[in-house]
Amino acid sequence: MAEPRLIRGFALFDGFLDRPAQEAMVADLRGVLAAAPLVRPETPRGQKMSVRMSACGDFGWVSDRRGYRYEPRHPSGVAWPPIPQSVLRVWQAVSGCDRLPECCLVNWYGEGARMGLHQDRDEADFAAPVVSVSLGDEGLFRMGNTGRGGSTESVWLRSGDVVVMGGEARLRHHGVDRIRFGSSTLLPNGGRINLTLRVVTPA
Image (cartoon, helix red, strand yellow):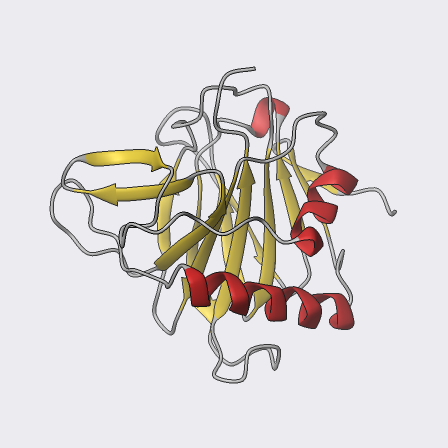
């Protein structure tokens, strides 16, 4: 495995998944989304997010008028499906963590979708990293600071890229400013899938 690029503590593994591995993972995710369909979350202020979401694992991250939190069930009431082995293998290869992820958040970005700068801090164990997998269209990933404001750096993430957010990067702000819709042929109708694997409960 090639050494990652390090930007502000974020470890970027360019082209970690080859095309056949990406296609196999997308096939696995179709099964996940058949069991737990994508939804468009609402912020506590009542605004609809532009990204559609689902999850797999023991928990899923949800957002609504009651706030941001992890829940053991999809908003429809069904249990989240298990995390596919194709996804777990990525965690085991790059995370450096002896705990398995308890949540794999599935974000789908259509044309015009974005994700504002935010911290991943709803988890109980910040010693465990967050591992991000990009599939489909390219996304402009912005990396900031632990506090709000200050300078940022951005990089285009391509299909098959993996990012590990651990150590000094674990609580840095990050987001996706935009996608290059139609820049990849992986998803027949375009768009970007971003998976983020997390440990949710205390060590």
